[in-house]
Length: 232
Image (tube, rainbow, N blue to C red; front, side, top):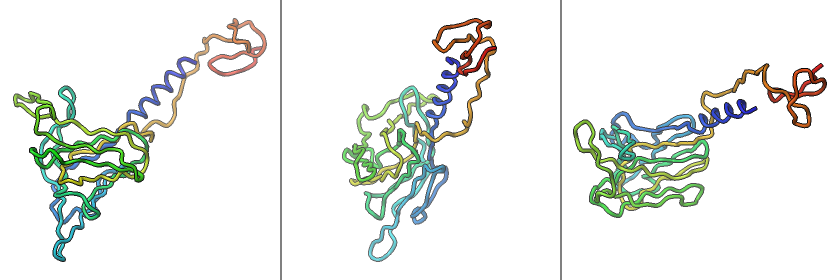
């Protein structure tokens, strides 16, 4: 029984450890972002970029190449492209993230201005604000400095918030932010694990219905390997 529960626990840990990631790998010019989506398997980012100025389209969002490190001083990831929002959010300039199942949402995001101290990221789900924090990087406490391949690099922290299945609305009400990655951890959606097969041990101890261990000469109903049968 202990072996069975151990294997089930390992399987559940493997399921819980699954992470889905959205990153950007190619340049997308302004004017091509409205309605564009990124991601798969229910974890999808949808861009709205339909701003108009003086009666003409006035696109804000774009993706460009930009290398940046996110994480901690001991555990970091390098991302090579970023989504630039190009201005503060509105109904015509915003991002929506579909969440397939409850978990921890992590966002690699920087302020579009290293000197700004008021640019906040606001996350809302089902009409409830679940995150509202200023994204700033103008003090040494706002990032870690790490020696990477002989060069001193900044490693920026990752925003982390618990989410439920549904849609997370991403807003930047003060001004532009740059997004490098979206990660969903702890998703309860199984990927790759269908069945746990446990080999029965014919030498496993046997117990009577009172829970007492008995030998193989015992006649009657016994329990072995978690199964009940009649030993004749």
